[in-house]
Structures are given as C-alpha cells and as structure tokens.
Length: 187
Image 1: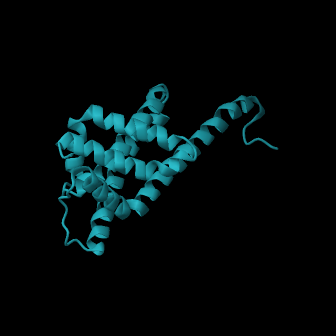
Image 2 (image 1 turned 90 degrees about the vertical axis):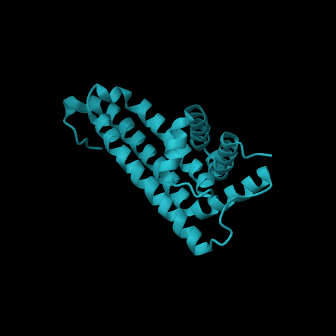
Image 3 (image 1 turned 120 degrees about the vertical axis):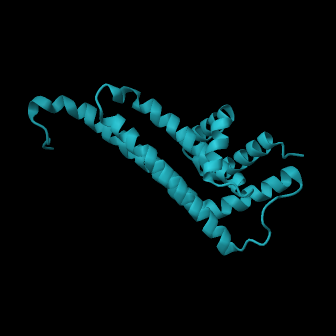
C-alpha cells in the first residue's frame, strides 16, 4: 500500500494511525451517548419520576403534563445540554491540537466526560421538579463530590462493552437516588 507520507516520514504512521483510531473511538462514544440520550430523554424523565415515587412514596411533578409537553420539555433540555457541550468542546479541541499543552488533553477530556455524564443524568430528576439546566449546573457545582462520583461511575459503565447498554437506565436511577439524597427527599 502506498503511503501518503514520504519515505523519511514513515515513522509517523505509528503515531498517526493510533491517534486517528482514538479520535474515531471518542467521536463514536460521544455521538452514541448524545444520540441515545436525545432519543431516550422522554422515557428517562418517566423512569426518574417512577423511581422517585418508589423512593419517596410521592412525586412532585405536574400531573397535567401531556406527552407533547413532556416531549417538548425534554427535547428542549437536551438541546440546551448539547449547546453547553459544544461550548466546552471548542476550547478542548483547541487544547488538543496545541503542542505540549495537548499533553493534558486526555485528562481534560475524561474530566469533561465525567462532568457531562453527571449533568446529563441529574437533569432528569431535577427537571421533574421544574428545575432547569442552569439550576442543574449550579447544584452539580455545589455538590462536586457527588457529581464527580456519579459521573465517574457512569463513565466506567459506558466504557465497558455490553454493560454500556444498561448505562442509560442505570444512570437515570443513580442520579434520581443521588438527587433524592441531597435534597433529603427519601423515605
């Protein structure tokens, strides 16, 4: 196979191929999670509501909310989260391509993934209490150890093949339990 690089740069193939493969894997990982959560968002809100009802014996959501309103609310929240992700992706991508600074890039990507996974899943129980994404971010910031613990567990779960299929419902249940614990809304 003819190389696109001159012969004296053949050694770069050993660097470029793994870097390209890692980039593709990260892209697929984030895309799968984002698309899966957008599709599952209305169901995740219902799962969170039912689990909180199991935990507390009652729920504080709007019983008059129609399916259309639920879809509208959850899809709107997903789009806000997506715009928040994009705002953080830009500086992370810039850091990733700057020589020497890019050495910290993998660690920043992991912290970013952990933070975003916890925000993603904390949004479901908090939205059921009419709290919006800025309030979710504020609560997550105030409860850093809980947030990083939840996100770390979800990061590990989503990183394991086959187990990642249960990550979405497990994340919703874990976030609902965590939110109930921090607000004192448990049995």
